[in-house]
Image (cartoon, rainbow, N blue to C red):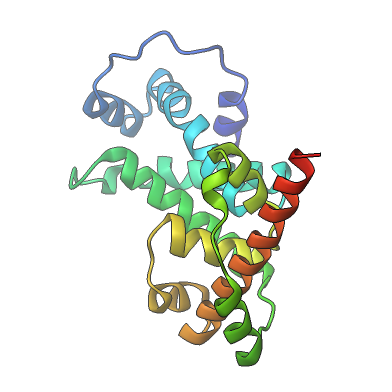
Length: 197
């Protein structure tokens, strides 16, 4: 499977955007290399962006991308057609990124006193920035803060779900999010100041 992924990385741009997803899925399950290449071409740009949100650098993002595509190809026969196929693929990528995070044990402790101070100070300045600027600033957060922030704000998980998935308490998830918001606010202010010079 890893050899397949390595071959897929060097593909020419796709020429067939009209192939129905059901045919694509069936072809991949049957081992048709052209269908596997097409699936990779269709989803790798978006899924790489998901990986980058969770990874500390491009190398980590590539590792997550590779691991997640291997899982997608192995689990294709379990897709039942409930909901969108892209949503199903995305869940595999997010879960793979979370598993990667858990293996690295990136969380940093935040005291209750810090949490209350942070939450009280947090004022959103994000409205002044473009989406690409915000995403770039999020990548500057430490892996622990970035992961909880992404899971809560972007993916929409509750603190209980985050706690269960990362093996931490609900309170730790809340404090990591509070700290991430405070750090992000500082990064936003610095970015705006630097831009106005």
